[in-house]
Image 1: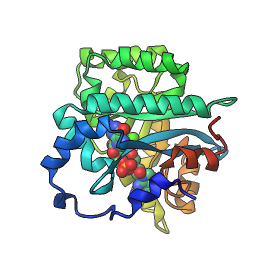
Image 2 (image 1 turned 60 degrees about the vertical axis):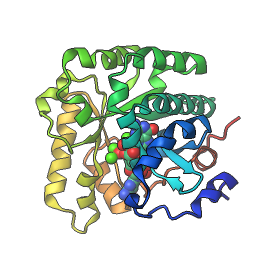
Image 3 (image 1 turned 90 degrees about the horizontal axis):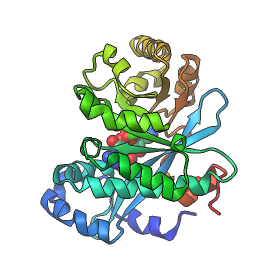
Image 4 (image 1 turned 45 degrees about the vertical axis):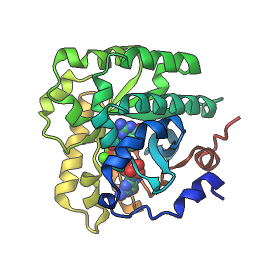
Length: 279
Ligand code: C2E
Ligand code: CA
Ligand code: CA
Ligand code: CA
């Protein structure tokens, strides 16, 4: 059974129209929400395609709003990004996720993926904060993967990329999130400290069809061979069916994430389902 905290908020309609909720009021309540601990994380497993084992988890933030119920990140991350609250919120996410990974990783390796917003990326405290969080949890840098969107990175100059390079040199993995949705110059990939490409769901959707959309197959094939040639691993998002999973594995994708394997779930449920109960 889901924990009581989770159920409480599921009474609210998660799909109620975003515009029905006043963005100003949401924005104004963000700082108090952080203080009152209204944010929580869910975790979705990352599955190694070669053997089907869980390789890590992506931490995804949610807001247990006292009036509107459970709000997904698309509803409030852009607002937090706009006001700058994303910096302390993002630090909270990082801290929670890294501590959780430490609990889960007893006797095994389990990586945790944390999303980084553009504003965090350009904040001077990114590197010292990340080091502090890893050290205080006693977690190896290689157990952390920071996910950065393509659009936040492409066009960044060398100075702006320095903090990411620093983290990468420490051993932190960097994933290029939502890959394929921006207008990236593929040649630029070599200038980024990324270790992984996360291929956006929009490119794996066509593989749900029988037969698969040949354009999507060709696209995935091309990206995988390019990524591997550059020494990058490929993670595919939005895997919803077995048919899709089989094809993506055959196309050489390394890691997969999606509802076919599991929906994002609270930490306790993730631990139970994936054999890493908290001590
Ligand atoms: P994302 O990083 O691309 O995360 C993947 C999204 O796809 C998640 O949505 C996840 O629940 C959803 N998803 C996973 N598997 C499937 C599937 O098989 N089918 C479909 N249709 N969807 C799937 P979610 O949790 O609503 O997050 C939305 C976005 O919010 C994330 O997209 C990310 O950009 C952002 N976000 C989430 N947590 C954080 C955070 O802590 N910090 C920042 N800066 N952004 C976050
Ligand atoms: Ca992500
Ligand atoms: Ca993504
Ligand atoms: Ca996305």
